[in-house]
Image (cartoon, rainbow, N blue to C red; front, top):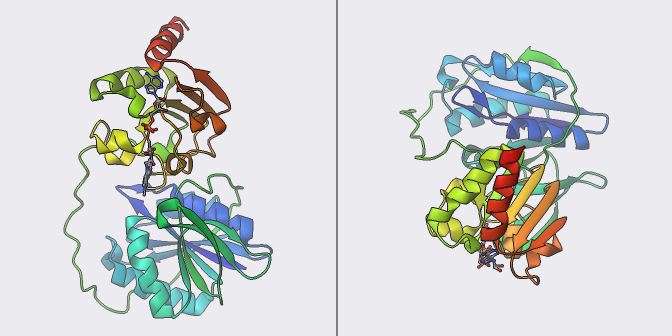
Length: 315
Ligand code: FAD
C-alpha cells in the first residue's frame, strides 16, 4: 500500500504529528511505501527530518505556498495524488488538517474518516474513531480506496527509522489562492505542548484552588515535567485549555503520568490510559483512577506532595 502523509509545520518547527503519521504509515504499508508530502516555500529542512522516517519525501515548493491556505494545499495535493496514486492520504487531525482534509476528499470524491485512533489493513481498510465525545468507539470499514484519514495526535508515537530519498515533486499551484494570509495570532499561554512531555504532573479538582497549582508546578519542575489537568481544573480557569487531558482535551502518552486528586472519569482516562507509568494519589480508595494506575497512593495529596518535594530536593 502506498501511504501519503501530509506534513505540518509552524514557526519553523515540524509538528511531531507529521512523524506520527509516518509511524502509522510504516505500520500499515506492507510491501508498499510511506511517503511524506511537505508543502511550502523553503521546505528542505522539514524534508530532511521527514526523510528519516519515510521511504520518500515529496517537496512541493512555490513562493505562493509560503503560508498555508486550504485551496492551494488541496490544489497541489490533487495534482500529486492524481499522478502518484496513493492508496491512503494521512493528515493530522489538527485545526489545519481538519480544514483541508474534507475539502481534499470531496474534490477527489473519495471516503474520509476523521480523528482516527487505529487503522487495520488486514482486510480492506478498517479504522477506529470515537463518537459522541468519546462515549462510543466505532469501527468503520472504508468502502474504497484511495481514502483520506485524519489522525489523532499522540497515538502513533513509536516507529522505525527508514531513511528515504527527497524528491522535488515538480508541482506548482495551478491558480491563485482566494485567501490571503495576514498573520498568526499566538495564544496567550501556548508554550507547553503536553502531548510531547515525558513527565506530566496532572491535577484534578482535588487540588481545590488555583493557588495550589504551585505545588504541582514545583513537583513538575523537580521531576523535569509539565503540569496538566482534568477538565474541571481547566473549566475553573486554573490552567489554560491546552493543558486539558482527556477526550475533549489532549491524548497524552508520557513516560510518567502522576495524577493528583483526579477521580478517573472515563473521559479523563481515555486521554492518559496509555501512559507508560501511571501513579495516582487520591484520598478515596474507590476512585476509578486506581483501576488504570500502576501504583496508587491512598492519601491526602497535600500531605504526600510536599513530602515528595522535600525528598526530591535532597537528591
Ligand atoms: P472529580 O471527579 O471531582 O474528582 C476529584 C478527586 O479528587 C476525587 O476522586 C477525590 O477523592 C480526590 N481528592 C479530593 N481531595 C483530595 C486530596 N486532598 N488528596 C487526594 N485526593 C483528593 N474530564 C477530563 O478530565 N477531560 C476531558 O477531556 C473531559 N471531557 C469531557 C467531555 C464530556 C462530553 C463530558 C460530559 C465530560 C468530560 N469530562 C472530562 C469531565 C469528566 O466526566 C469528569 O467530570 C472529570 O474528569 C472529573 O475531574 P476530576 O477527577 O478532577 O474531579
